[in-house]
Image 1: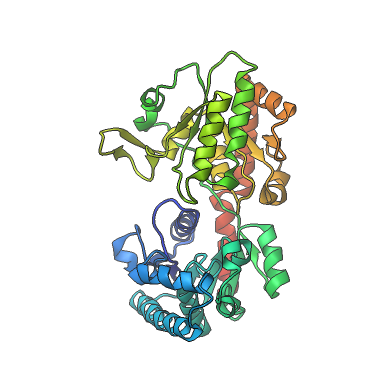
Image 2: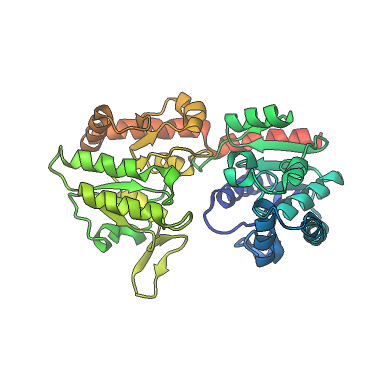
Length: 420
């Protein structure tokens, strides 16, 4: 079949783009379908892609409209409604052209019917579904999970399309069991849980030596213990807990410790970053804020400094910290298991419900760096045999629960039901 992926963006390393790429990989290489792409920002193959600039949530006209929908209650509702209708019609026509040009059999909307980053886009996709085109809507997070979408004058749009209550030739997919329960309780809609996955059937390759000099580039000594925080710098990532853990450990052992934070600050302002810098200085923890040199691609910046991908950094980590307060699933945790690294996890709700029951060996915490957490972390970073036992078990469990094989079977079943 010819399958069309639709969203506001398929570009870079955001969670939606990454998971869509994995779905396409399985659909094409293991289930023998063809995949095509529609969005407002793309880094997908040009020969199978349709770019519509106004489909991107950061297009100036979209930003202006979204601000009115979710914050400006004093604007004329008629003016807003007219603006939504005009953009919805334009996007629907572009989607219809995409479907016709590539003879699409099934559309897979990626989060565009769940989180209202682009209200007219969701309305246009819903209209396309109402015409009877089969769809598998992949929902990563819902609007009612985000406070900023609970105000404004968009509720009637949210009720109609985020997600739509369409059941004919329409399948809802969510990434965790809490989302499944929430969708049923709020809207009475059945859904299938397909967790985030990784290609655990093919372990990381050791043949590429590009990242071998990472420690040298950042002046991390060979006997220095490298803790890696592979997340953005936003409050829900709980990075202050990682800093506290490093501080307490380096007071107890002779080895020097550094904490590498992989991403840039600024997604939600700079206040949290400045708080973390102050905390690390107070506690005497060396933190390397590496976001300027870790990104989507390798190369060199304007100063001639070498740039790395996150996957170049994982092999150098002695321990990974993942103290998130909340996650939709946890891609960075799966990456940690993929690179066979011991890890600390703050038991966020989805972890407790959908990941922990699998039996992973980790250092776990419940919002507090206790003496037991410190002791267990020291044990696993100093005892290489123990770390190897943990990571080998974790990798095996991921093959069983979060591999491409799991995704292949789930997608095969859903496609079968949809076509039948």
